[in-house]
Length: 128
Image 1 (cartoon, rainbow, N blue to C red):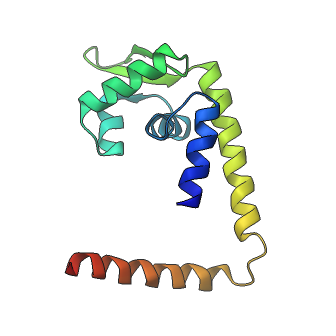
Image 2: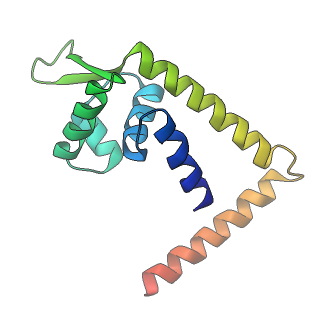
């Protein structure tokens, strides 16, 4: 919850919401994507993605363009502004990861322990 609250404050400072950041993060890491691919990756409806993309276009973070091989599809790409914001966010993400985990004596043991806790949590949730 601490990380989510901090993330919400951070993205709000640049005029985004967490769902909009998730979409732009995907495009930042995977390159231009169709709205259908974005909907699948985000596990939301295409209509939901349309609303997110409309807002991101209006705010100058992404643009829509023609797909080079499928005239029925539209590609969502980052604008220069969107790419600059995502580059800063990626840098900040890496800095936070280094701060949190950089001095960990045995990262593999931590990862195994976390996997164990997540497995137990999934079991507990499926039992209820």
